[in-house]
Each structure stands twice: as C-alpha cells, then as structure tokens.
Length: 205
Ligand SMILES: [Zn+2]
Image 1 (cartoon, rainbow, N blue to C red):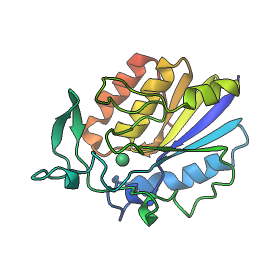
Image 2 (cartoon, rainbow, N blue to C red; image 1 turned 90 degrees about the vertical axis):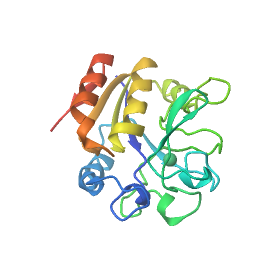
Image 3 (spheres, rainbow, N blue to C red; image 1 turned 135 degrees about the horizontal axis):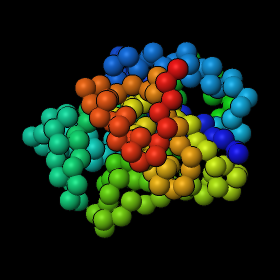
Image 4 (spheres, rainbow, N blue to C red; image 1 turned 120 degrees about the horizontal axis):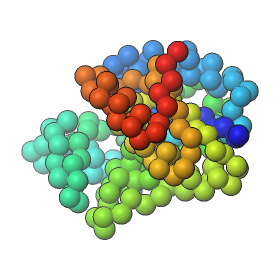
C-alpha cells in the first residue's frame, strides 16, 4: 500500500483574519505540522487555491451580487465568495509558518477565470458540462498510490469535493476530520454521513 497525504488549501486567506476565513481554521495547524513530519506518507501533495482577480467565483465580478449568494452557473449552483487567494497576493501563499519542504507536488487550482475548482482532482462544472481533470489522479497512480488521506480547508467545500473525487477515482480515501474545519459547521453531521455513504473513511482522533 502506497499512501499519499493531500493537504488542501492551507493558505492565509482561509485562516482567521483572511479574506475567506474558515472558523477555527487555525486549529488544524499544529496537527498539520505533525503530519508534515510524519514519515509514513510516501507522497505529499499540497493544493493551492490560485485565482485570477477576475475569477467568476468572486461576488465582486457579478454586479449587484454579494458574497455567499448562490447563483446558477452553467446549470449548477455556484456560491459567490469574497475575493480570495488572488494569484501572487500574500493571502494566496501556502501558510508561511508551516514547513512545506516535504511536499512533492504543489497543485494550483482555480486558475481558469471561468470555472471554480474545489476539488484537487477536477474543476467544477464548466460551460461544456465537463469537470476537467487536474491531472492529480495520474500523478498519484504513476507513483503507485492506492490510499489518500486528506486534511485542510475547508471541510465542506474543497476537502469534501476532493474526498468525493478521490474515492470515485478508486483510491482508498480517509478524511482526517479533526484536521479540517467547515465554512458552515451546521452541516457537518450530514456531511460526515454523506462521505461515509460514498465509502470515505472519517478518521477522528
Ligand atoms: Zn477559491
């Protein structure tokens, strides 16, 4: 069994004080630092939300709309966000207090202005009705990875979508639940049940 650690969007904009702060997001940092020192992972991947300033997920690019409104985009629901993780801004860095030396691959996502990208594996639906792959499945398979463990932010968006896609791509998939936090924690119980139904293992410490 070859194991990969996927660290999702651990960036200042998703941490307290950031542009799209996830409540208690900083509570995961100590545990993530320990994971980065854990020799038990064969491959470590970090994703980095990395948007152009005119990204379609930003409410500021939809006149009259405000953050957290939901619109229809290409036939699917799209939450509009505050501007966040704009390319080359401080908030878009990988959180600088962690030691990222161990990371084998930094995967930037959300770079196409016309489509959002929650999952590490596939963009959200585009105008053609497709979810184009990021290439992560092939990267992991080429290294013999069979199991992935996920931590990071936010639990109910980018971690959840990544876990759903990981299991559908055939990986044994574990979410390190305590090393994630949600934008909307009120849905956590339902989310855990949903992921478990898909075959994702929820690991609580
Ligand atoms: Zn984003």
